[in-house]
Image 1 (cartoon, rainbow over the protein chains, first blue to last red):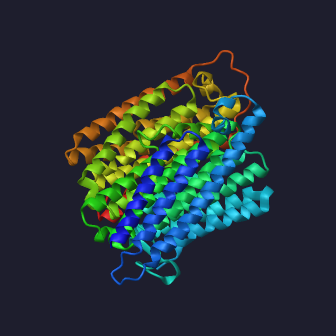
Image 2: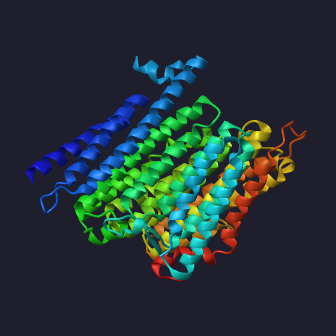
Image 3: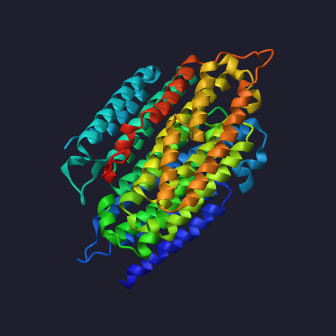
Amino acid sequence: MSQWILYAASAAATVAIAGVGAFVAVEPVRRLLSINIAYSGVFMAFVALARRTTSGEADPVPHALVLTGIVVSVSSTALALSLTRRLVRATERSGRDSSSSPDEREA
Amino acid sequence: MSAWPAWTVVIPLVGAFASWLVGRKSAFVAIASALATVGVTVVLALEVHARGTVLHRVGGWGAPLGIELRVDGPAALLLVVLGIVTALTSASAVAHFPMGRRRSTFITLWLIAWAGLNALLVSADLFNLYVALELITLTSVGLISLGPSRESIRAALQYLLVAILGSLGYLLGVALVYGECATLDVALAGERLARGTVSSAAFALVAAGLSLKSGLFPLHAWLPSAYANAPSPAAALLSGVLGKAAFVVLYRITGETFPLVLDAAPAQIVGVQAGAAIVWCSLLALRQRRLKMLIAYSSLAQIGYMFLAIPIGTPLARAGALYIAISHAAASAAIFTATGALERASGNDSIDALPGVAQRNPLTFFSLAIGGVNLMGLPPTGGFIAKWLLVRAALESGQWWWAVVVLVGGLIAAAYVFRVLREAFVPAVPLPATADAPQLAEVVSLLLAAVSLLLGVSPSWPLSLAMQSLGEGP
């Protein structure tokens, strides 16, 4: 049981730290990374929940949910990255307003 | 047991892939799938109206192991009205996009979003609701990014990043519920969930995530630029239909999973947010110079009215919120479509460019006016029925301050609607040289305005559906 609490507490800590990061971040890529880490924390909470059965065997449902969640989070990450690339290209093409371009600020 | 609930998801999904495959002739696929989907939802609503909640176990597996699709009265009502609005809005997209790749992309995304919306409305499973929400989010982002400028891509990216952060809160709340009840079925979890720290924390996480996704005050600042930079048909769809998805989830689970939390502090916090949204976003709408920004802020205020159902919490308030959702869907889609038509004619959507509109585009002006009356909440529109229900619910439950908020919001709405209508009435001498507004979009906006009128003129059928699951008549 104490092992379960360790997992749950670290999941909560991961979500909290990365969640703050996601709100504070200005650059799209940094915010995306924070959100991804926060999602890892949520998935960890689900995986940890699987231990809490009375029979002592792991509950398979949270594992199935985590798999689906990973699929969703990978596809939204891919969409966000492709939009970022399009935004950077459009900014480079127009050549103006470079101060608000995400890769300029990273540099 | 009937399989109609599953068909509401399957038909638009098949249509989406078919329209992607046929490419140039996608408009025909769109019309066929729209007619079929609306037909199925109407059949389903008639069945629910006659015989009560329709239940479908996917693949023959029931809860708690399998996935159940459940359509009660409110879900059936939303399926029909949001379906009709979605179908009409897409017709204006045919006028907006010339035949080609962008049009078929729009139609594909629009049909997938519709499938996601229907999946969300028929789901009775907390995790299924999450998947449907994400489907709607990803397609909304695609629809926004179809806009003309770089700002559209920026707005789409911002929308995506905020929306997945909102989903994260919801998912964490679901994890807590599952850990406590060992089920994901919406109603079963409600039976097993006891009042306590865990249920309050789960509700707080879910409510925070979903209110971020719907742009409830004070988490609203990111949303208007998405509406204003999206192509007009996409903006109509987003503000009218897709922007309500997160609220519908919260509406469903507050009723079935979290009924115990409704009188606790988290529900009152949601209430304060809703009240502030109504007053503050209406005031911001008053200050806008662009018509699309004005409508975007007024949509945020209307979201506030819907969330009032959570602090008031009575069946009457829930029916009122539902009625706001459907009448605002029709009204805001009508206004956005009309604005799109005017934008095509005059080249911009500035309020200063409005003089002469009443002479030049009387049809569009008329639908703009009816939509505006709906936002104010005056008879004979659906907005009046909705606000009347909310005010009565607030007074009956002894929480009169919410009634004051509703009335103040209506007054500010009157101020910004009259500002627009007055400018449009001013005769322009000479009439500025403009292109013709697309006729199809004008007709579509008129039809959408007619839907919002119809909801006000004959409310008995929708109201009996809205109150059905509560065991009351209209």
